Image (cartoon, rainbow, N blue to C red; front, side):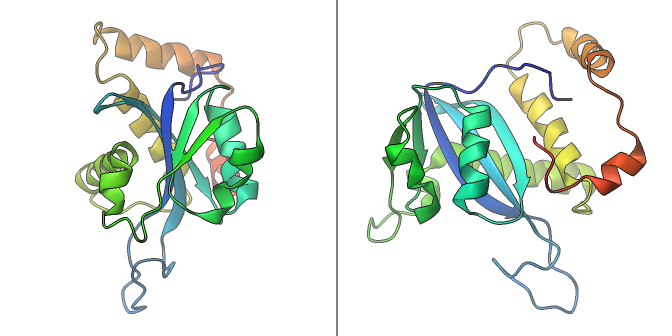
Length: 193
């Protein structure tokens, strides 16, 4: 469902990472205890108090080798990137392509969802959609495709031509190279969303 050559996010863009998925029964893994959770990096356009378009990517760790390429692939040069104080975003400060604004959560007296409201709302909506649509039974191997579907739907929520959504989906299905089930199962975490 990802349109080839799609426009990059621009303007003010919040970026954060979170875990998607549930706890394996009997493991006691909570929070960042991995279990069946998959780490996902999220970018959202900020249009005033509203969320513009979104981008997602599954990553194996929240390191600059994963976060910075995601930002370069999905955000236009000259945009302002707003992140939390995670140290692996520091290379953005010396990269001349973006303005980098850091909102440090510790010591601010505010919650993460108050400092980065757009990206946390997108996270929340994603998780609600996964829970409501897929009953929380999301396999990590198929998560990139669920993220594609959610982004496709979310990015077209304000479309003035709602009837064209199916048309756009069919158009993209024709333009994008066919991916078989075996390819989906072999190519999981390194797939670019």
